[in-house]
Image 1 (cartoon, rainbow, N blue to C red):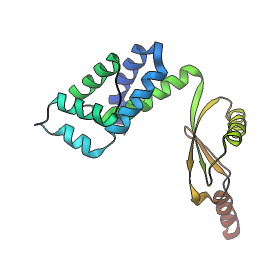
Image 2 (image 1 turned 180 degrees about the horizontal axis):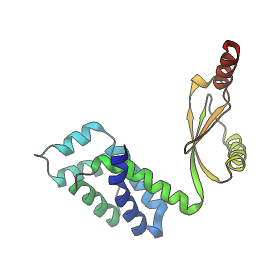
Image 3 (image 1 turned 135 degrees about the horizontal axis):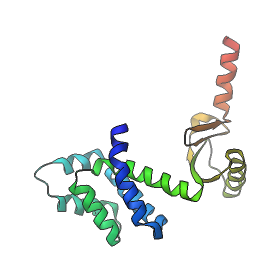
Image 4 (image 1 turned 90 degrees about the horizontal axis):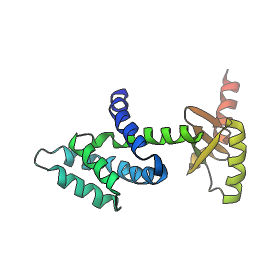
Length: 176
């Protein structure tokens, strides 16, 4: 989807430049809008020529259930007026990447077979930050198919210490 990334880049850069004073707040409402815009039924509704931009704007803000600041209102209106509602998830992703790059951190998704206690997650975060050499913003997702252990995804890097991965390695070694 290089085309969508190309479309989203100017929007993400403009929003990043305009919201330098409140990147966290902007990211919060942008993520909420991106989640709503990810709905195929909403995009189909927005693509209907009989539906006005105001109707789409009202529906998105109602579904998102948030009070947008003036900058957020203008941003959403611009995105809708230019027919770029489908690009909102990519805009949010690029905005987050710019924010992380400025702060020297990265997003990390920790897949775990079981829930991780907060104190254990803190220890895992410290070990992962040391391993990857940067500050990490952790998100935990449960994945029972891992059987045990964790699988960490940081950008395009993957650290897989799950039981499932080890069993697959053993299978490959035994069948080779």
